Image 1 (spheres, rainbow, N blue to C red):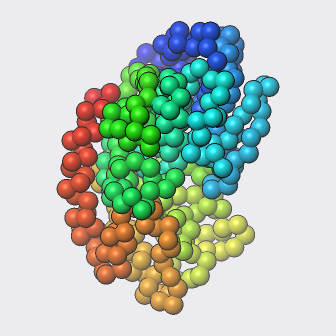
Image 2: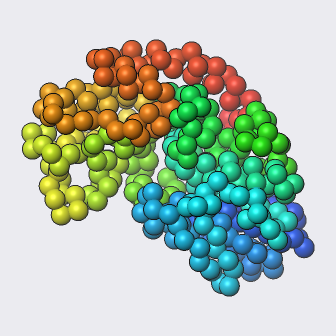
Image 3: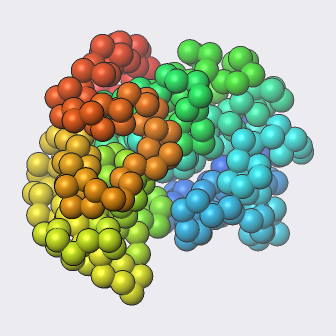
Length: 361
């Protein structure tokens, strides 16, 4: 049972989209977190007599257990073909929609540009636009909804699967709102508009604190990790670890190359040392509206002071930020405040533009 004031995701409101699926061959972009109450969306629809023809799965696969960055393979579920759209088909070739009349999209996003579920949506929308197939996005809450911050992807040479749309690192929109913006702003590669419908969330606002009922991906198992993710993910563009392989991924950063840092952890059987963010009060994490990018600056400075012979940044960092000037400024000794000047004006423009697509107060 759902409480009177409980958040009700779009997928749970089956009566709002079931009429569009009648007598149609349906495809669903989904994974383990695509639940209606505690039942998988695909099972819910099959039990209602919907003709589900294909399931399309993003990074981490149908079960949500495939490690990050590892291509997902095709499989099947209840005799339904499960098609990977994270691997050779991650840009969702339109021919994957053969035999489909309408596409449902239901993935739990976390509101960060580099989180690849929005890239999967972007290419699914474009495939539908090219084929003239409607897409229904079943909206879900964004656990980072109150944060609009960070560099905006605007360098075309840095577009990749961790950056497909010109939005800030943390864009403060639900995945449904972002879909509306992508479509209206004509960002799809084909430059076509898609027949898009969004099923909004009920009992939801931009101040709602929300933890997905199941982890949206293998290393985001806590609300703390989800709130820290927008900053700590930038360390994926460095020689440091974000704690994958420890008991606290995305709650700490560490390196196996040094023993001088304040905290040490076991990572895949080896000791690594670095900095833990577990002592930050959750109230503080939930209230911040500006991201502490100075953590990257401080870690870089600590690194070059203690390991001057070892590189800190790798080539991935620029793709994550979407702006080479961020790395260049840090290497020149810039601080957190000077970093903000890089994106301040663009961020204000984005805030003004994005509000046109808000579905929630």
